[in-house]
Amino acid sequence: MTRIGELAQTKVYPLSHGGAVLAGGVRVVYDTITNATTLNQALRMTRGQGSVVILGLPAVPEQVDWTPIMLKEIKVIGSVTYGAEVFKGKRADTFARAVELLAKRRADLTPIKPRKYPLEQYREALIEAASKKTSGAVKVSFEL
Image (cartoon, rainbow, N blue to C red; front, side, top):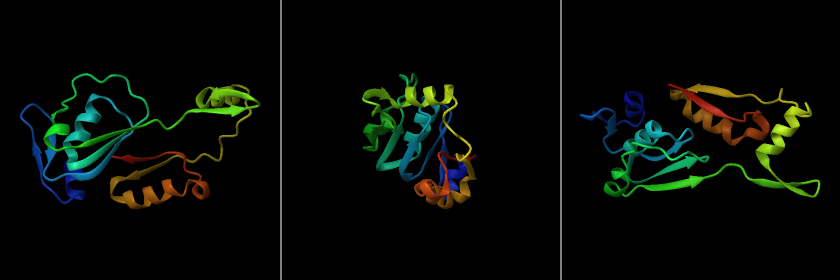
């Protein structure tokens, strides 16, 4: 969390029971993993009245300290990034359809270009993620 504190230009305070909290914090945190560790980190680095966006559909995480939500009035927003679609007259789960195409070797994955950026290049990473139609990036992640 030290590096995130540097990027946010704020102090990092260690907690007596482990982990750390950012002084002030950041406005929005996206949790794309969503387990106890990442949720605790997200809630600790979000500023008062900020937002934590949970992407995907996590299991029920245990040992999450939910008190920052009340103390800092944090908004927690859930977003499922897939769904169902109609294909050849049948409604099908998007992931099930993708697995079917892969199993039949009818999907060409060579254009997919996953990208990993150092945290310092977050602007470039977000620009690439936003222009996925032209960049070919499906998932942009950070090296910590």
